[in-house]
Amino acid sequence: MMQSENYIYGIHAVEELLNTRIQSIDHIYFDKDKKSANLFNLMKICRKERLAYNHVPESKLQQLAGTTKHQGIVALCSVKEYCSIEKLHQILANKENPLLLIPASVEDPGNLGTIIRSSVAFGVDALILERKNTAPLNAAVAKSSAGMIEHICISRPKNLEGIVSEFAQKGYSVIGADVHKGKKPSELNLKGPLLLILGGEHRGIPPYLSRLCTDYVSIPINKTAQSLNVSAATAVLLYECASQREFKF
Image (cartoon, rainbow, N blue to C red; front, side, top):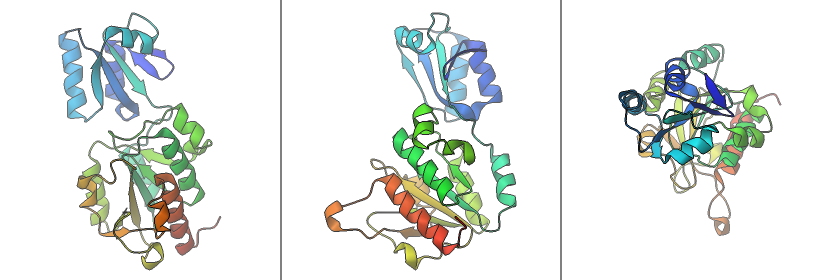
């Protein structure tokens, strides 16, 4: 398998990656001018698995791969391998009142890294990410997390909506953070099995997730500030969760 930094290139190398480590793929780049049955089949897999991909000039593929021998395709992979859903369930099986976090549509790697750091600090059991519209687990995220990326399970399932529904059916409270509506953090019971969802600054919580929320939380702040950065809001809410749960710091 040919690899340059976090980039894997070549038809067979990327095909093998799709077969064995699909959750670690952040983005796939195709040569916009190259046509072949193999590339078309790999593109179909991207659509089926909801993987982010786009077509770029051949010069861009050369730049990413560091070689001309890319065969028209380059895949960007994460610096950390994502937990499978099976692994996630194994981790949660040993928890009395699991705490899960979904930072939806958080595109800035600095914000995502800080959220990961806060998650470890305040006892989150696992993060669940979208496959699209969320920053990949790259070096910038790892740096912003101050190394905490290595100390928490991070999963990125194909069908996030289905996973959230599954947790709701198991008795988890699904609480969304919203600037404009919701109860104060102290007014909510955050002690039981909980799935907390926050949205990025630009997109917020996507509709397919917001309709699954059983309640909303809103952090009261000075109106002059208008809103908190998503990573700051996450830290505030996770501290409230940790306090109610009497988390041992």
